[in-house]
Image 1 (cartoon, rainbow, N blue to C red):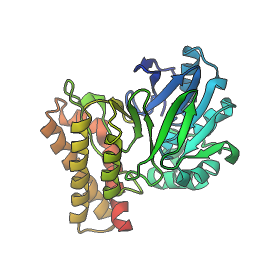
Image 2: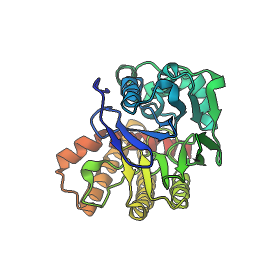
Image 3: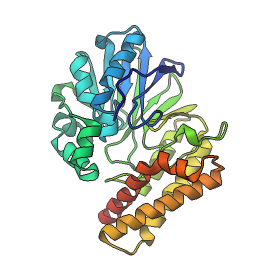
Length: 318
């Protein structure tokens, strides 16, 4: 559940601002704003509960809701996209930028909502995400590979980056030498870092994990030669060569884990979740993480559960 208070903005330079969505806990879900020449793009919105924080951030920056030109969704999972419709109701000039596979689901979110309920259950989905507001089709711009969005004179180039989901994009911002990567470049919670070294773990959550595509997308992002990659969980990464190497290794480890499982049904999912837990703890030990096991699992417990479910979905799709 998102907290009701307005979160502080963090300035990353080049017009990039980090806003903590306050979803579940602090520093778990990031919303990024790009401000250029008095115009604004919001990259991922978290849920409807985050709307007051985003509007408060605009006010802190001395900007009105009319200054918002783009709501850009890296993909349509509701921890990224659930608040988009509610935000656009308050921002009359905004257009939605989304992968072509996701556009129809933002215009009519019924199937998207049903899919979320199937993963989390109705009570949790309603409590965590709230109402998902549909967006008029004439305010939605589909953004395939190579599509360019203009924010004033600033060009934001879209990369098609499947692997976590088939409807996933990343946004290359040459002005700041950055890529906004959503979930494609992994989960990297700041509590696990060791000095300048940044911990990373793939997210294989339901229902479209594809190891081969995930490898390609990590390489596609690195090919932009960015100085920084911004992920939704959580924000700016700079140790990019080492993070990419860890992502490749761990994507393979997730796939190998799944292929080795022989059980079926609920037993298979339980075995997969247990395997992801072992893989995560082994990775924290390898990395030299100073958190205790109980604290580490408290931070990553939901992600471990979702990774196991995503691997089960992948096995079913093969």
